[in-house]
Picture 1 (cartoon, rainbow, N blue to C red):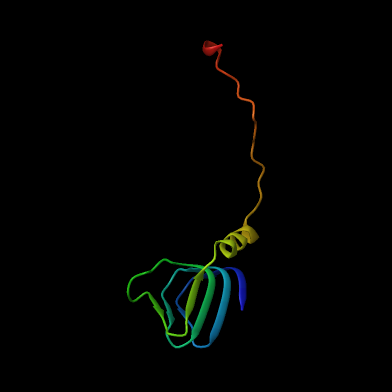
Picture 2 (cartoon, rainbow, N blue to C red):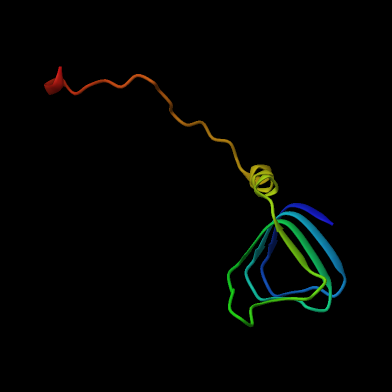
Length: 94
């Protein structure tokens, strides 16, 4: 059971039970035909061809926008961004 952002940099082969709440990023192929993969959030696969992602009958994918946002927020670095409600006009427009 994982929560948050899960990044797999090679092939993922699921033979048991795996539950992910958040975002699963796959750089390689995924084979979950022999196991039970449940993702509540989203899956992003770099190789989404017919042979790249295989799901079995016991696998479930549930899109959950909130789970994806929480996964991304857990790894985001806050930065200070300049913000102003006041905009000065150029001299020729005054």
